[in-house]
Image (cartoon, rainbow, N blue to C red; front, top):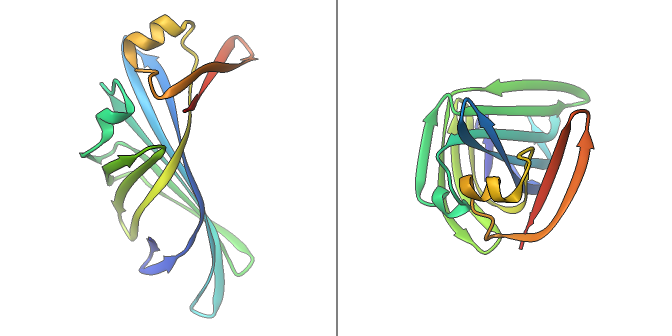
Amino acid sequence: MLKINSYEFEIKFSEINFRQRNYNGKSYITVNITNEFFPTLVKKNIVYGSCDIKVDLENIKSIDDLVEKEYQGQIGTIHISVNNDGIWETNAIEYFSIKFVKRENKNLFFQIMGKDFIYEDSSRMISLYTTSTSKEDLEKKFSLKDFYSQIVQREIGQSIITKYFIK
């Protein structure tokens, strides 16, 4: 269920991708939940769009570390983009709470609440990407047990981005 300004929207698709990065000697995991929602009639206007939710978390060693945990405050950003009868509108929410309820195989269930925003659903986990240079260094900071050992690497500028996919 997705509610924006008390209006309920049906989800077209939703997915979760993870990003691992190092900053000031600490490892951070960003949980990125992306969705699109179907058109709905709101006050005589057709409204549809998408949400991009990014949550930055420290001291997460595996996906299972998220389960049954709740985070709140300025932990990331919710970007909402809606097409309101042909006109695109955007909004950002920087103070919100997220609870990771449970995990079933590749699906992670969550509850997100912010100002005029409620999102309770599950999303399929897709991948983890990082610019950490070696698999061994990454495994010291984040478990790769849920990911295929086969990787995809791309060189972008001075960085090598490595992507691992969920098994």
